Image (tube, rainbow, N blue to C red; front, side, top):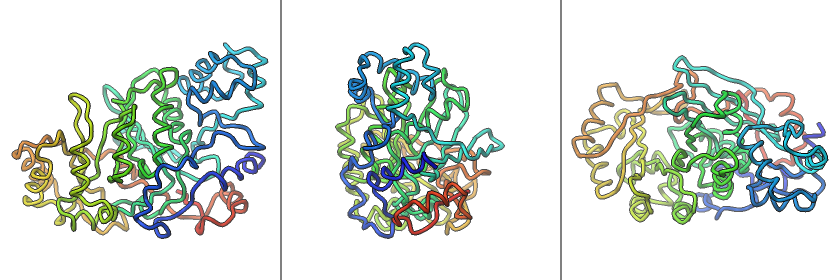
Length: 409
């Protein structure tokens, strides 16, 4: 209870809460508000998980702790996933006491694991304010993949995606985004192995721009998890002001664009954001996007039976991408209750892929991993059921910005 009470001022003051229904499309990009950061709260401890290395060095100064200690702490927290000060044995005991009084190290709590027959594992995670998200582990060789979330729910209203049905409950903080990687590496004993990270879980990363970019700085720090940006992929529906801003960032992840349609009308029916940022403007922005040598933009294309899977669609898609350093990832629709579309047959999927290849488009067909546990693309959703006791307590402390109970599996 004390933990929840300490968190409440942060929840109210520092997070923007709105749903897809209450926020107009024109306001989907908020310029990257710094309100999603939690770095200092009067009357409460500071969450160290939210700080990059430079910020941590500054936060140690009032405690009389030398700046070089920040690298040691960062290595323990982000590199070795250690959350207990007592275990950081290369720090003097007096420092550990001061740090314990000044900082918390928040980490999501694993509520549930679901294991697929193909080895994929879905994690239901509870955050400090008792709201919940999902993250997915996809075993592979030579590197495993973590699919992580950037928001609780999503405001983009994509009609083929279950997450859209949740609406947007709130943005994740940078620490909450990065903590998913830290937690999964620890839970799965992968601290010493290379991993890929895809920002393709719940939420639109560029809608939560500041927190997403700050999380990338945390995850790629050489003194922490030391993930290479080349092993990180950011997937976006194409919020153009944020995409343009991303082009000038010093940390550049791989870019994946959720395309899914070959005409303005077709794409708008699947992704309402297309009415604000049309397909033609999106492709023009992609053509101007700076790419490193040998890099390409991945265009994701959810293949839907009798909707966007015709030979004409394949030819249009090839023409749209002419001159772009691009590859197409065809994603056969992952059917689910409440989604008004059907998955194409295996023959239709293969035909579409062959037609693209014949047009000299680099194409891959995504194997649906974790479909049996609803861990595949477009299947992450928290079913609304009876709230848990901790969620009920959080609801009593809330101020009313959430009109519905927190979602729960």
